[in-house]
Image 1 (cartoon, rainbow, N blue to C red):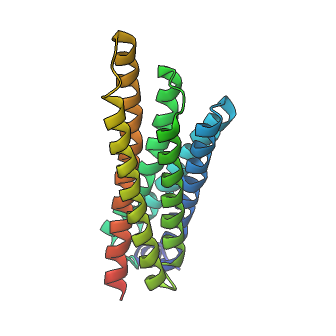
Image 2: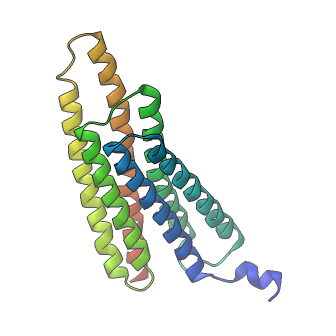
Image 3: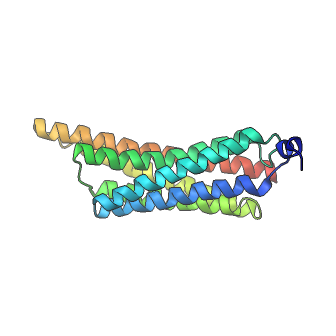
Length: 209
């Protein structure tokens, strides 16, 4: 096969497989984040970092494939958007662990609940991408579940913020409040990106059916 044929050749399985790999890295990273919230040790933090780096590498390969392929089985804008949203989820998991370490923030019940919900949402997105090619209807079901988990995460986020602003008593409490608010925002942003990934997944399903 000549270089021109390879350039135009669609690779239906290749892009799906790369998205699956990226989503799998994100699941593993969010699982490590959940474990970190239960036991904030260096080893679990390193796992989050490692999975974020692996996910970045998969995304770089995917973008390179997109740039070298003119005909794609899914709209290239959708492939790019889904990859970016999935990448953002693990990125926020990574920054959460990093800032908790820097700011010396200990996990609390709100952080554990949010991390658990985000982990479940990452699994739903992963399953949605897995089912996309052969069972788009099932992929849509997983997208809907991921969106529901985002809503639950945002509910916990609002509860956490409300509780936080009732606590200030002195300057030490204010400093702690500002630290926790920053961490809560990272997890809320991760939930938003999970919601975006679910939306793109749903858009892809609509175009496929």
